[in-house]
Amino acid sequence: MSLGESIWDKLTRLVLGLVVAAVLLGVALWYQPVINANRSMRARKLELDQRIAGESEKARKLEAALHAMQDPKTVERLARERLSYARPGEEVVLFEPPPSTNNSPAFVGSQP
Image 1: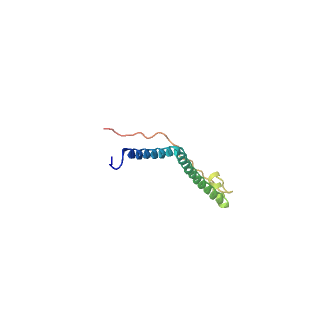
Image 2: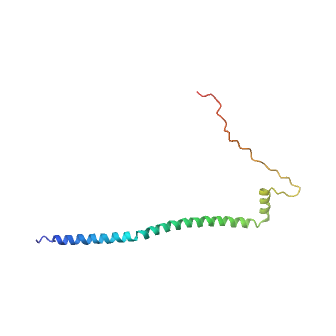
Image 3: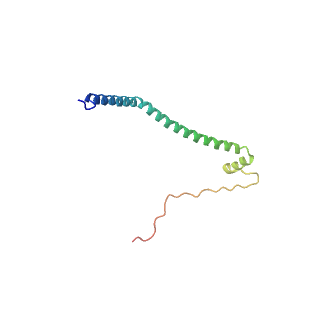
C-alpha cells in the first residue's frame, strides 16, 4: 500500500486532534467559574461606581448648600421663605393652595 498515508496515520492525526480539542474544552470548563466570577465582579464594580458618582454629586450639592449658608442674606431669605419669619413692622401674607377636588366634571351634552 503505497498510497501515501496509511489508515493508521490518519487515525493518529484524528486522535491527536480529538485529544487537543478535549484538552481545550477541559481548560475552558475548568476556568468557567473564574470567568463567571470575574463577570459578576465587574458588574458589581460598575454598580458601585455609579453609586459613588451619585453620592459624590449629592456631596457636591450639600457642600454648595453649606457654602451658601455662610452668607447672611441667604440665611435670611430661607428663614423668610420656609419659616415665614418677618422683620418687625413687616406683614407676612401666606397663600394657601386651592383645595383639590377629585371629582372630574361630567360630560354635559347630547350623545348621538
